[in-house]
Amino acid sequence: MKKKIWLWNHYATDMYKNKGGRHYWFAENLLIEEYDATVFCANTYHNKTEFIDTGKKKFALNNINGIPFVFVKTTTALGNGFDRFKNMGLFYWNLFSVAKTYAKEHGKPDVIIASSVHPLTMVAGIKIAKKMNVPCICEIRDLWPEAIFSFNRVRENSLLGKILVFGEHWIYKRADALIFTKEGDTDYIKEKKWDTEQGGDINLKKAHYINNGVDIEGFNKSISENVVEDEDLESGKFNVVYVGAIRPVNNVGNILDAAKLLIDDHEIQFLIYGDGNQNEMLEKRVAGEGLYNVKMKGYVNKQFIPYILSKSSLNLLNYSHNLYNWSRGNSSNKLFEYMASGKPIVSTVKMGYSIIEKYKCGIELDNSSPEELAQAIYDIKNMPKHEYEHLGANAKRGANDFDFKVLTSKLIAVIDSLD
Image (tube, rainbow, N blue to C red):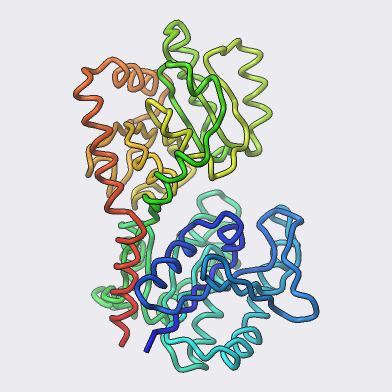
């Protein structure tokens, strides 16, 4: 008899729309492996007015490529103010009645996998799983609230900070299993002395590591199916590509500083794809400083990223050193897309548990100064062809370990460990 797996991710609505993403690919591969997988998400899209109409019911059900998606009624949330908290609260609250109704119609699950970003999804998962007498796996995709503390939005020793840490500990203690997306995230539990070896109440044997990854078959298929007509991509130049958000933590201004140092090398051009709250400022810099070797490409639909990366010569993982704790590793989706493209990678931060170092597919910088970044780009551009190709081959080979077929096998091992 097929095991029923419920995958809960508030923001998986975007995965439904894009036909891809962590829980879409997990569900897709679970179905192939004879598991009955259903994704639960909000009926609203993150930071958009668009939504899926649930009518007078608290949820709507739709299938895409054989994957059932349950859309839980919430309200539109733009920005990070009250509307977003209301959106999260409604998702949490409505999950209780939606889970009960859905279980009556389709049978209760064998396992609930409740995924962050925000912790209320995991709290609901633990409580509902207990009522149904089934195990709950909590998946922590970002160490929250540590991320909030690192951005100075809340102080850890404040009353709110203490409440958030208490809630986090409650989740880790009561989950039947924990999945972290960065290899070093269990170090956090040790730092807090929450593990049983230090007298705490969390057994690290129930903690597992499954990083983000890439659907390699879909990635390669997309290269031929979603072509971008762009003369810059076809220019034959050494294309230094950055894809992602343009916010302070991504420190994209540093790329512009490095581009200025390399402006006399007419073979190198920088192609920056993405948007964010620093986009306008950086576009003004490009125009004002005459950085003709930088092209700000703006937002690009995810379906076109594989083709863009297929035309890159080098891919940039660009972050601020001090706005995030990188010691525990990296779980950014773009790292694995970069690897799948088979091109060398330059990271402006040295990661703990470094995947780039493990697979020898690029360079990590010590200080991420513009001079250091410019030198790394110059060195890769001018290295012997066989060395350059070796870096790219290592990246592509490494991506195979993070293909979602492999990651789903790891997830199944966690699920089956709860029997």
